[in-house]
Length: 267
Ligand SMILES: *[C@@H]1O[C@H](CO)[C@@H](O)[C@H](O)[C@H]1NC(C)=O
Image 1 (tube, protein in one colour):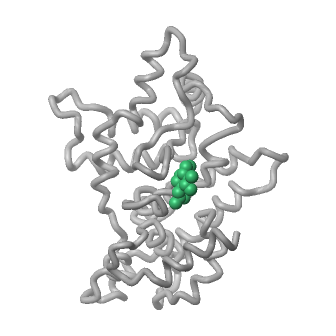
Image 2 (cartoon, protein in one colour):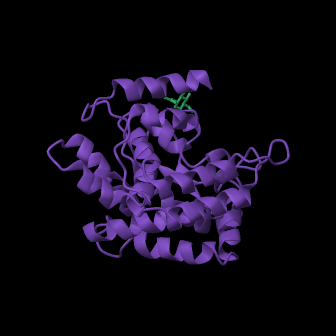
């Protein structure tokens, strides 16, 4: 744990506001920590997703429910910043990939991914998953027009619908720390004569220029972080805007964040 923690601490100590090497996924995590509701909901899903279960397993259903709750009840500006924080390097992208405890929420139980047809089938039988997948298809699906990029004003609803899938049978995640490519935990290797159908479903995530464009253009950056980058703004004003805390925030010091750092490699 200590060896994982050291780079995070170092980043925090070295990273001055506005520095080019800023890890925006760390920024997003700090912004969530500073907000009572975001922090509470995140702590809840981490506790569920790392909770005790039989060896080599995890309470996947409870973990996923807690994740859905995080996105349903958390402040969208903060929950989406955690999901879509833009990264310029592998450290940031690795953290982004790990944020929603993929070892429990995304992959498993087996070592090999299931067929996407099985995942799709499970989703369509689920009253939770099915409407969310439909919403995702409607909001991020390819348009019949010549350009398959989505409309500029379509991007927010596409990202919202994508976030709605986190914690379902087709939970997507970033596939590596070298790109912003996403996919659900499944493949089409053994899809036989339904290969095309399988690829079409998987392609909703892996070959979707509308979704890719929306993720790349993500700028729903919490005001709290803009303030850190722009010292001319009145910080209290924006802190109150973004905070759902019962009491007003009085700024966060590095010291107040230290207890949280112990959890950060997992968040
Ligand atoms: C990026 O992913 C590779 C392959 O999984 C891994 O070996 C490497 O340590 C990761 N990089 C970081 C910065 O975590």
